Length: 283
Image 1 (cartoon, rainbow, N blue to C red):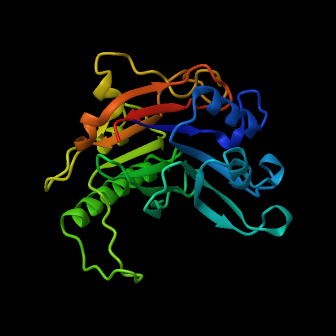
Image 2 (cartoon, rainbow, N blue to C red):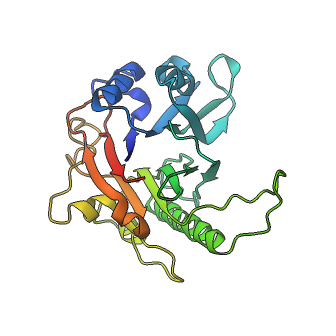
């Protein structure tokens, strides 16, 4: 079995307003260390965030048993002590990926919205039941226009990888042109910033053409008749005035359905405004 945890840790900021990555790490260890940990909203060297700390380096120190792969949504001058400042997502894994790709997501102009670049990181994870692509992402909140464009890009990446899987290019081993096919099977997790009744959710789960495996919501696969457990707004009522609801998901390609074993949400911790979501698959 393989366990994946996804958690928007809000750069370690708890509902009490305290930024504490040690508290985040303690909660993850209490819940049981997963094979792969996908975190969103990691800050590096921002003067106004965590005293300008490099949270990537701090999380590496807190989880020395993992390999770390950081995906910067933006990379700018003006960081703490004159270094560059970054903000993005982090994957910690105990299964060495065979390939790592980082994809910047589109942000079409929207003058009415706050702007934050968004990205997704893609790791190819080996498995005895077949390798799969694992993607960790954090989508736009303030602009539906940008969010829909980002969902469309995620779908395009899935189509692209599926096409490459069925029609691989020319292989030149031991050169930069060595072929490493992206698997057809895919898991994408993170803070999608949309609700199950939104246009974005409907677009994410819409059928594909040309025999591309559709994307399914792991919760709906395992709990079709059970009310969805909220993933944010449980404790933080200042940011989430509409109360507890769901914005964090695991979407899987339909060909992975037989391998899904369990999905759950930790609704007890207030170490972030979001809750950790745990998926277990046979892999």
